[in-house]
Image (cartoon, rainbow, N blue to C red; front, side, top):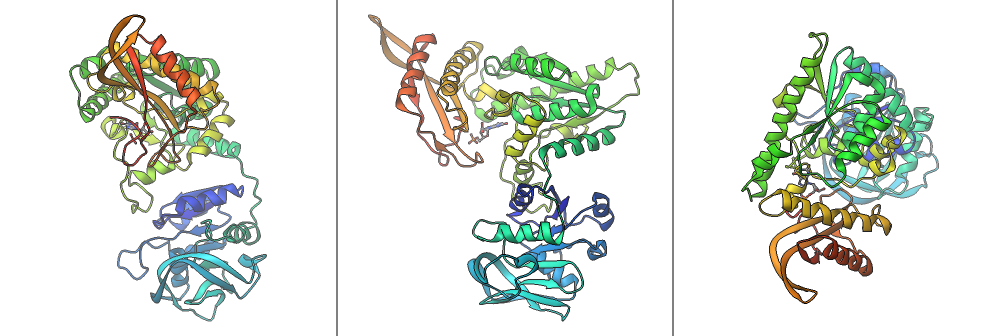
Length: 517
Ligand code: XMP
């Protein structure tokens, strides 16, 4: 494993990605991790990430000063190079001329990190500080016109530093430089796979949980489904999954979850029918945020009651439900401002059940915390989840309540469910599901005039939303072929009673959002 100490770099996820893509498992750790903790991981090498601080700032994050006692190769990138060099006696200062963007690198020493890299190559720089004086134990292995120590190595200790960012695509030979570190300096084998991750993570969870019990809120989405499959494998009957049917689900959702988890995994699944409570809470409510708040509160109540019920069933009343498992992914960790270095900005404000763990008083198990979405899908496949589960589009926690605009009632939910099912059938059968990030129907709270047969109709309007997106922070409307849109419109108007018009949403995010509420 290659631990990456995260000093708050915006590129730290990319470093982790590059290392894993090379077949070496990497994990992100806070900068305060101790040498003893690192030793337990048995690292083959360590990477120190970049970060926004200056090493001479009072509260600048620093690695354990005994880092080099581990005697494993260390690669410092940008700020990581500066802290590493400082630990080994160099001086870091604000640079006379800062470098942001592309810079021309001249390689002085074509061994170690620069094996196979041309003498002159461009690199991506982003720094205001730089190493100013370098003790004799160091060699400057590369320079740029304004940075005499653009890359260094220590003569006696296995430390390498690069002031530039090898992890970004703007550094064309960055991949070679990282590979040289992993394979030549650290001697990694490059044979890590998702199956290895599954094995080691299962083992870790089993040891952590011991004889205690774990509950998991299963939503039917990819993340919680993968966590369920993972825990089913590692702790079996010590896991209980709670699936809340809140009446705001898509058509067939509950059946799919039951079939998958009862059929393939034989786990303890509790399906809680809470439609009435949720719909009662939503009666007369039109404001989207108020809908979310009410749904969130009700969810917590249902979850709490179910947990109490499960506990009451234990034969041994000393058994505790100690843990709550969650499908938190690495980007969620960063977006919610809980990045390891605590420096990433708080971007994502809405979450389906914000505050749930704190209010319930469980410890958290988050097996996907270090993974990216596509890695979670790969893990789901390794765990044997069916393809239609692994490749699902995301579905919001408040469900169809934010897709029935205005007041949410059962007839309106049924109507949007029907339209949504037709839409998805057509998207799938036309091979568009994997090409789109999210596709859904929205029921508008307006009536339009139409004509059916010889009669005038006055019925509702369904809007179709289909977007392409990488991270859901920005999105563009999908260019669904007109003939597919024509079939969708035709089928919805013919098959769904109460709808006489279908519109296609051609707004991008920003300025629109993906959901309509
Ligand atoms: P927006 O509408 O903000 O959506 O562009 C971005 C992504 O987040 C999902 N979304 C939610 N997910 N609870 C959730 O769990 C919510 O309240 C919520 N609102 C939006 C949305 O489906 C899209 O994938």
